[in-house]
Each structure stands twice: as structure tokens, then as C-alpha cells.
Length: 223
Image 1 (cartoon, rainbow, N blue to C red):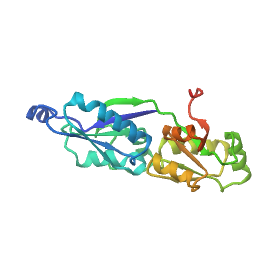
Image 2: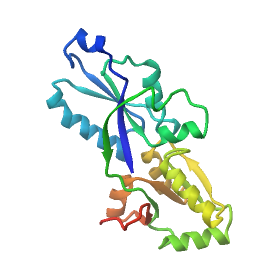
Image 3: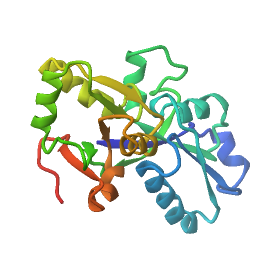
Image 4: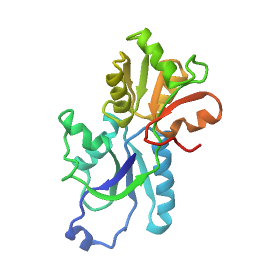
């Protein structure tokens, strides 16, 4: 799985006006604070500041399956390089699902590709499901009763389980959240039966509070 950090396209006039960067840069994180992506982007910002010579101000703008932040940037930010945002795969998927206020190709200049996420399905460690097969068997016997959370409608987290449910003819209810932190807290609080998310669940696995049923990929994930 990949994420993209994008910026409004730079213009020649903007570059000629001043020596970049002459002031702080804003990094829009389109997820709530405390989630796995938020942690990664804050670490990236901290590591970049010494090379940039200017502070990088993190601005969390969660919502719309991770597309609200980039959409706000496309609409309001000047194309001068002082506002950047993470752009997820959902940014390219959502225009095919609903009307959006941005063009993922024309409205952004892509700077760097970030990879390294492992997506997977987790349940509370106290749940009765030890394997994905256990969860599927329960869903088949009790249609419409199981719920799973994700980081938002149309995200990779959501699509992965939606495809699984369609292929196996499972009746499960999807519960969208604004990001990983909210999704995993809801699972621990018993508000959903499972959570489809990225590596934000890793600390909970290590502490024994969650159980990983499956990862999404052609190969087994490394421990």
C-alpha cells in the first residue's frame, strides 16, 4: 500500500519572488491526531525540518475518508510550496464513487511516494474469533449481526473487507470513522466487532489487547 504527499503546483513567479523556504511550511495530515499515519508524517516533518531550515507545522484535517485535507488545500492554498498534504489512494478512487471538489491529477503536484503500511483485520483479544475462518463462519451463521470499522467509506481498509464480504456473500455492517485512532478505540470499546486498519494496531497486538486475523497482501507479513 502506498501514500502520496502532494503539494499545489509551483509557479515560476512564486519561485522567483523569494528564496524558498523563507517561512514555515504547513503539512496537512488528513487523519486524526494519534493514528499511525499521523505518527509517520509527524516523524517525517521532524526529520525534514533541519534540512529545510524552517519549521513544519502539522495541521490535522480528518474527514471524507482522508480526502478532506487535500481538498481544502486544493481549494484554499496558494501554489507556492508552503502547503503540502498527504494524498492517499482514496483520493484517486473517490471520484469514481461520488462527486468531489478536486481533480486528483490536475490539482496536485506529487513530491514523494511513501510506503510501508501493512493493512489488516483485527479483533479484540477477548473475542471468540481466533482466526479469519472463525469470523467468516460466525458471519455466515449470523447474517447482519457483525460490524467492522474502517478509516472511512472508500478507503482501502473499507474496500478490502467489502470485497471479501461480496465474494463470500457475507452480510456485515460497515461503520466508517475519521481515522485509525477512532476506529481502534471503537473496537476496544466494543462498539464494533472488528477493525480493518493499518499498522496502528501494532502496539495493541504487542500488549495483547487485540488479535490480528489477517493482513491484506499476496505474502505473509513479517513479524
